Length: 620
Image (cartoon, rainbow, N blue to C red):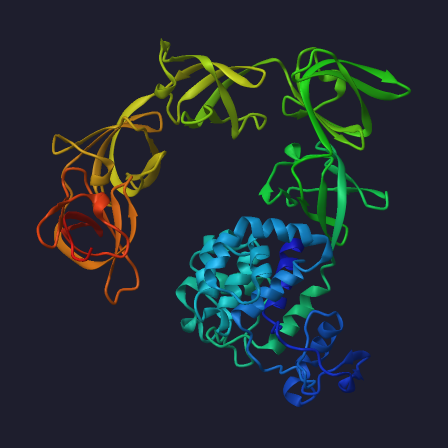
């Protein structure tokens, strides 16, 4: 199944590199029948393209490639990057009527990224590719920035896109010591070797007649038509708009009903991609009773994308009892905010989840917490958990104490792994058998939790303490600061609490004093830094004159764009250590600096980071 999906994605990508999207269909007076295939192309019957002719005709008949107004196919034309990506998206279903709502969701999620590239066409296709995971944010500059979108797609670039689209990037990059069997292997960019090898091994690309790969030449329409034809017969994609009425995680069967009332069942696998409004979900958390698009490759279920996170109606409350009437189960619950019971009849294929596992309605006890999803007045899905629960041996992955207090844990039991729970306002907390506050619970702590109605009411934590020395690899300063440190050839990521103690040359310091490659001594509690000790970083003098393009007073940072430079420099202004003055010597403050002003910055550079010591506002 996985191989089939990869092949299918390769087909779509090949399509993306084969057809200029702006090409117009040839006139009807050009129609011809050759080899039993109706064609409109007048320029593919020379000996130069005999090897590609039947493939071009076949792909044209399927509607996957088209020609131009004058009846030509122009088989030796290059394919631009944007043209290729747009057709890749269309082949994946961006313009299929069943995917109209998916395209709307894709715009909601990715318009803010794509909009900055000023595309005059192709936005639908690009956001759809991002929704499907075939394009990442980092790829946009490569293929769309400035004039890049109109540049020919090079053969080595094609292998990179093919590999990513097939989900093979990790496999490709894990291969070391690759020896390509092409005569011009030295011309293949070093960062593309694994991709070229992967696409070759998958049978998607081939070398030229002379044994070369010709990595820097443009992809031709004729070449891509052949590769497309070789793989398209192995796939059969269809898109179905249906309403999901049940999910059985034991048998791995999804039941869905079409608009005409036809019911069908589909088996999903580990490779089936499941999303709810663009966010991946686990099968056990997949909602019944919602509209969805099912993507099939032949009879295989490739993807399920729900268009709404809500069924017809959702009711939460406390379980009261159940009964069997005329062979159908009826559940009585006390809805939240009410005192009397309400009865609901279960659908024949009702999905039941109790404490995270498949169950039956007999699993529930009085006062258990339940959520029921109603479709056409019947329960399509019922999810419940016991009134009280104990979770032992969990590891704290994150704790949020700024809004609704929540705790995220990892656990060996998938029922609890990567789950986030609300924390009661009167939670009881102990650490190493000593009562404490929530601010003493750190990432990496081992915890035993008591929950009531799904809310944590008690935390019993334990931690280990140690001291390590290493080299800073990265530092993120935010509401949840982190530091990556290389310790004995291994890189570890540690959380940094707001009250971390910092000493630099035995004086109190801040996180802004640290730079990549600084050596630090860390006191750790579990996976959290409680103290950082370091010596002063090496600095060199520096100065910048330029226009202010950005200001973040909260973090003490201004962005300065020097003249004739393409990128701005981030200048860190330390409280009490940076002097601000006007050009005539008057004292100023950071909030006197405005975007668009010219400033002269004097300071020091430490490991590529500019620390401002004197900032002169040249223009008001």
